[in-house]
Amino acid sequence: MAVVKEVVESTRVPRIGPYSQVVRVGDLLFTAGQPGINPATGVLAGQAFEAQARQAFENLRAVLEDAGSGMEQVVRVTCFMADAEAFGTLNSLFSEYFPASPPVRSTPIVALPKGLLFSIDAIAVASSRHA
Image (cartoon, rainbow, N blue to C red; front, top):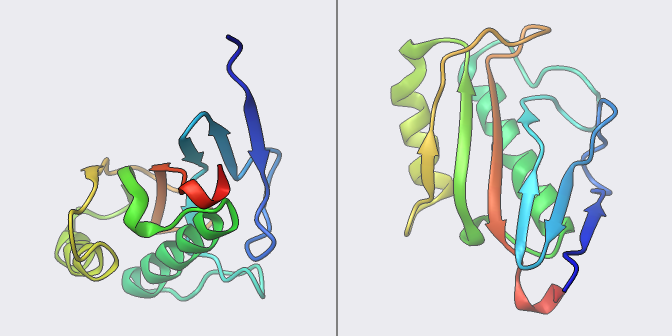
């Protein structure tokens, strides 16, 4: 049985490079990193970590919904942070966006390009309504 790979493009969050936003393989969705860039303007959602991280979570929500899933279906995320001092803010946002049964999380501290302070990618279960 061949595994089918389906590329899903979000209508609400335009991609900013030569990559797929979401790839569906079977019942799993794999997202590209979602930065804290406002999709309406194409610029950073702000200079502060919380503004950028909140926008990144909203971008993640949008691409998952456009792929027929949602935040409640996320099983794993990688949160890329430019500053370890922002962990408290990340934990607060994580509790807000994943209030029940939060996903597994890895959080490397990395240098991000173009003034980015945060980016998040995810693996989620595709909702049955999209199957």
